[in-house]
Image 1 (spheres, rainbow, N blue to C red):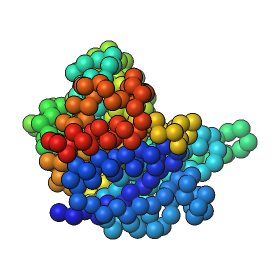
Image 2 (image 1 turned 90 degrees about the horizontal axis):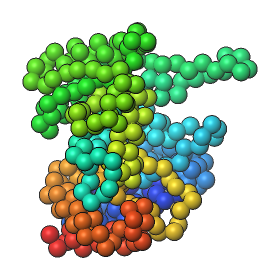
Image 3 (image 1 turned 45 degrees about the horizontal axis):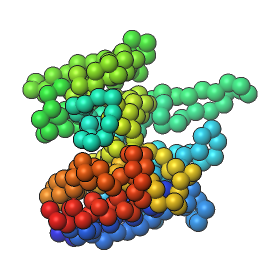
Image 4 (image 1 turned 45 degrees about the vertical axis):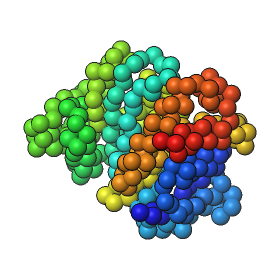
Length: 335
């Protein structure tokens, strides 16, 4: 089956890692037509808009997108394009599976957990204003509708993937109304899934328990801001943001992305690691029913990493982005 997929090239190292992943996908047998677009800083420079309408129309039409990393200025400049994309397309779930990668050294072994993060509201939505000079107010919005639908996704995901437990992460001991509503919504949904264990942790305690023993968790369900922080923490348990995938999912749209930064300091040098975007593309392949190709790529990546001869410098080697992708593609073709 031929697929038409929106391709967002990204900023900084984005075009390099995106090209590498496209190479692996096509050489592994994916029949695809790419609908390429710019977003973020590159789009602002060329089109005067960080999130142009033709890009949004493309994703709405194709239902699937693969997105390279985008720049988000700190403290000033344009607002987050990632947040804007999630809002514009109602991508209410951020899904980040986190698992130990064979042949990549990290502090822990046997990590296998899934982060399910509400993706549209909370403090992360960026609803803030200056009340008077020197005083800024940020609004934390939690609704039962958003909390319930992300909870349903988490429990459905757990059931479909053989997961036994969903842990809701919150700060309801302090934010009794907002986080309390989130927790209440999760518990209401959990009652309809008697085959899945549901418990909860206060967010600071959850972080402590994660760094003590991450293998004690299965599926973590969090509001938006905590989800962003905890998912990055969990990536650090297995080697960093360069080795974990992510997906933003709505009712009928999926945007699969690398969650690391655009690394402008190494842009254009052909040295960036494309692994995070490649693993996100593997999630995409499974989402569109191309599990056989996904398995082939995962196997090929595992072989390349275990052999250790071709690795990018962040993984302890000296291979270029394109050489790393070529090694994976050759293994995938031979499979």
